[in-house]
Length: 584
Image (cartoon, rainbow, N blue to C red; front, top):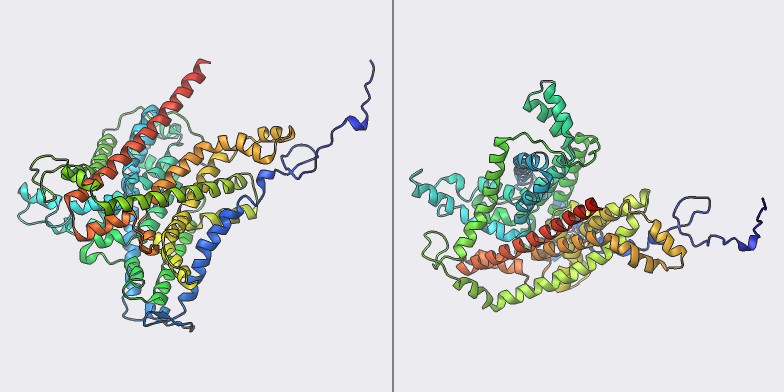
């Protein structure tokens, strides 16, 4: 056999361009793993979030006299918080206890429904339950609070029904504007988040463990405490944390629903930046709230311990019927949709008074919505802010996600923690940090400050959604394209971007929804610009009119249609792909 001898000139050397793709002795560095890709997102978070928090710390040691910050270092702001007989520290402790109870109640009450959908429902039917459960979350936050405001009070729907049915001669205090009303509203507002965190954990539960335990004689409560709850521990803890952080920073719901009992610590913080003009003291209150939340998170992490791996997803489900879980799930859906249904009903009522009795049906109030120029201006402002927010968050988040999805080590973890940090804080702390930062540099608040606040809020969400999509992505096609001469930018546009597209679309939709709905931060950082949530809040404070009901109904209907269409398009596409795959 002849031996073919190759000359050294015919061997193409691997170009030393620093692309690291692994495999072989000549390892090249991946140009799409460059830290420059995540740099814009990191700079934005540092400038718009971390620096304002640093200024917040500085302001907390400066006194405020006659509305002016004095650059004199003092501990007086903190002494006032911890002084004996004061109201601030007791209010913080009371807020934490009540919010902790509300978050725990939300997680516990939503867990049976999450277990039913994840374990008992046929996989092909879960999409219907999931859509039904999360649709209320994508309607306006203020509208959902407004819907429950109609339910409570001496003349609210609940007490009116109780007195009309003869169940009580006088309205019940429990359903008045009080702490129980706040708790019920909190559970309603945060139900979808707690449901999803529990569902995601339970969806991967191996039902063979339950069957084995049952065969060995374990009672249902024993299976619950020994298998189900430990398996779903990560989802339960995550649900509690998300609910707690959201509730503890909510100063709108307590003030609208709680009446005289609706003063929470966040209300005290916000008041210092309103009529009180005590910015230094307000900064100290905000910092105490932030430190308290971080200490709670550390304590939860320490007590929770390690969580076992989730396991693999299967389409297996428990076929045994559970009448209790079915009835409970149906009742929960009634709880979710009754306030919304009544709100739409009142919007169609041919009466100047919101509530019962129903005197007839009319579309007059819907017409009044479109005849209000202030409302149209507020809607245009919200759409403008949301569009710019989505563009910035998705572009910067995608670039960061491309780099973080293929990076490893401490720098990657630090970058991810930095970008995700705004998600760990209540919006009220983010808001006061931003306005204090703007005040420190003498910048005027306006439309741009709203956009910046919204980007800080949505950028972490966009980054994480795209990164989850790209993690584990096979980059051999990128390598092949660049080996054939394609520039890294072209490889990204032709190969990486299409792979990330579902995550990008999800990030854009969620960022848009969050921006359109954001009120707490917007209320703090806005100048003279009025967004749709600010318009709704102003209208609710002065008058609950049928036209406002019609506006709320329109927002709910549009949100519902968009989510349902998107969900069923995605479901239909995945079903078609499974059918095509099975036919090949």
